[in-house]
Structures are given as C-alpha cells and as structure tokens.
Amino acid sequence: MQPELRISVSISKMSTLNKLRLRQRLGKYRIEKRLGEGGFAEVFQAMDTIMGTRVALKIPHATLVDSELLKSFRREARLVAKVDHPGILQIKDASVIDGRLVISFPLGKETLSDRLSRRMSLETIFSISDQLLAAVAFAHQSKVIHCDIKPENIIMFDGSVMKLADFGIAKVARQTVHGCGTGTVGHMAPEQAMGRPSVRSDVFAVGLIIHRMFSGQWAEWPYDWPLNGHRRLRERIPATMITWLRKALELNAAQRFRDCVQMRNAFARLRPAALRIIQRQRRRTRAGKLDTAKPAGRTRRAA
Ligand SMILES: Nc1ncnc2c1ncn2[C@@H]1O[C@H](COP(=O)(O)OP(=O)(O)O)[C@@H](O)[C@H]1O
Ligand SMILES: [Mg+2]
Image: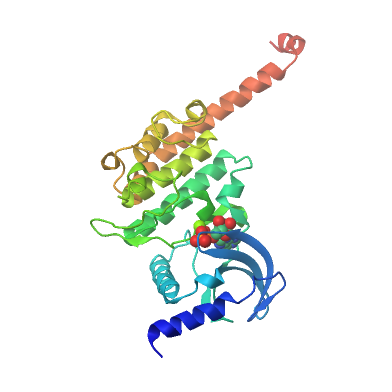
C-alpha cells in the first residue's frame, strides 16, 4: 500500500470513532469529567484503574490524528522532557489507545485563569510570580521558548503550586525564530502578534500575568503605559517593582529583559526591600483602621 493511502485509511477509520463519553473506558483509564478544550485536543479527568490515581488526559480530536499530529506531539514531548523542572508540567505517559492518542499528566485543581476569579493574598501573588519566573527562566536557560504563556496554560495544584503546561507551539531558541506566531492574541507581545516572536515575547507574557495579579485588571492592547489598573498597582507595590514590571512590558522588545533569567535575577535583587516596604505599609494601614474603629470617647480617655 502506498503511504498516502495507508494514512487516509487510518484517518477515515478514526473519524468514525464516537465522541468520548463520560465513564467510558480507554485502556486502563476511566473518563470521569471533561476539564477543558484547547486548540487541538480535549482534556478530561480520568481514573487510572491500575494505579488508583486520578490523572488529566489530553486527547487530540479523533479526526485530527494523523502522522502530522503524531510528529508534532513527538516534538512537544521531547521539548517538555528537556525542561524537567518543578514549575513545568511533565507528561506522565502517552500511548495510542483504540486509535486515539492519549497523553496523561498530573491532575491539577484548576487553571490560573480560574484562580484569578477569586481574591488572592499578596503572599499568594508573590509565590505564583516566583514560581512562574523560575519555570520560564529554566525553560529559557534550556533554550526553549514557550510562545503561549497565559493563565489557561498554567495549572494550579494544592498549596498554590503552579505548573506551566502546553508546550504545543514552543520552540527551541535560535537566533531568529520562525513560526511560534499562533499564540493567543490578547496575551501576546506586539512583535509576536506581528509574527516575530522571541524569548522576549515570553518575558512580556510573564509581565502581563504578574501585572494582572497585582493590579487586579488585564492590561489591554496596545499596551501603552500606564496600563489598566495602574492606580491599584501603585497602592499595592513599591516603585522599584513597578519599574521592573514596566521593563518587562516595554513595547519595544529590545528594551525588555533579555530573557526570564535576567528578569528573575532583577526581581530577586529588589524583592526583599519591596517586601519590607509592603509589610510596613500594611502595618500602617491596619493601625490606621484600628484607630478609626475606636470610639471617640474611649480614645480621649486613653490619651
Ligand atoms: N493537568 C491538568 N489538570 C487540570 N486541567 C488541565 C490540565 N491540563 C490541561 N487542563 C485543562 O485543559 C485546557 C487545555 O489544555 P492545554 O494543555 O492548554 O491544551 P491545548 O493545547 O489544547 O490548549 C486547559 O486550559 C485546562 O483547562
Ligand atoms: Mg492551551
């Protein structure tokens, strides 16, 4: 059989597969819940009936499983294996079951996008920022550009632990990067939207997320400074941190941090003093609140 023919036969066989149902068995997995959908795959919560543990299963749409998809998944899997870091979601296993490509991952509680809809303490924001910077710095050190860093691709685990996922369009850094332009508009550096992404586009994306967490609002295209939520930002974090964020969010990529390694190092230098200022500020605000809460008569007697 000619190769083209063989591929088209297997595609037509696969496209007759039904949509996955809940409680359906897929090899050793039992599908429990649909968690989300991305560009080319659906993600389910499933029970590994041998290990007795829950996993997230990423299953590309059946009609799309062909040699191209397998090739691109192989690429993604090898890229992720290069970035073995606690802040990066690793693949547990991948196999073809009943004609479907089934990829299993550690199961998270929710995405950062879900988490952002609830209040976050400053401690949590600092912790997630530290973890995100460490993960992306590690990827950059390993010469990997993620190209699609956004809250939907950040999976949250117990104790505000985060892991960066979805290296589907990630690239190995070269001097000039081609492709990588299919990231999500809306969380994308201007040059990436123009089809010229680089390591510095990841810096911008990380800056956007950290800016969103501290300011409570998403910055919006065309990202002219000051961005949405600037007042809140100024109330919450010291000027040194705002300058740092601004450098990550420069419109001109050449003026940004070179990569997340540099961005993280700069943060590490200003972090201790920034935290002290924030804590002092909070003590003052709390004391102010207590003062105004005291009934006037008692204050006079105490004085
Ligand atoms: N390990 C996981 N645990 C929990 N939910 C996940 C996990 N991985 C992915 N998801 C959910 O599935 C969605 C799509 O997954 P993602 O890996 O980004 O695939 P795609 O390449 O299709 O965008 C995510 O936005 C998230 O809602
Ligand atoms: Mg995704």
